[in-house]
Image (tube, rainbow, N blue to C red; front, side):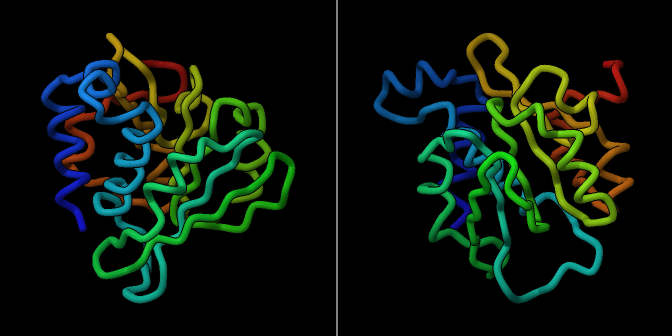
Length: 179
């Protein structure tokens, strides 16, 4: 269950192997690394009144969804709960999920999506410049050919989400336009 993804995090992210190095070794693409992060976010975030049964719902909003995301996440489970992947087209009504990943090609919809999900404890994750400063909660970015992430803790807390100190330790923290 978790060993694969913990290995991905330790081997690819924390121990400084780059996606290019991993790919050269026949390992991971950028979206495979992002899928591993999304999976682990489910284990390191606490939702208010989180159910102990039923699926962990991970949504993807994209014009052209990277197939690796859904392929890697489907069939996995977190804390005994299966992962259910929902893919939303840009402009489609978004139903609340536990985690919502907005790809770069759909990032212009962040304001509308955040407004629609206000009051719902959804971890909103993106991958575009300034995403976490503009109201997203977690944003992937590339630094020295490595996938990293930044967190806007105050936005996550406003949604009722509690982020693990382990997660916060490996993130770059941002808030409303400041690092």
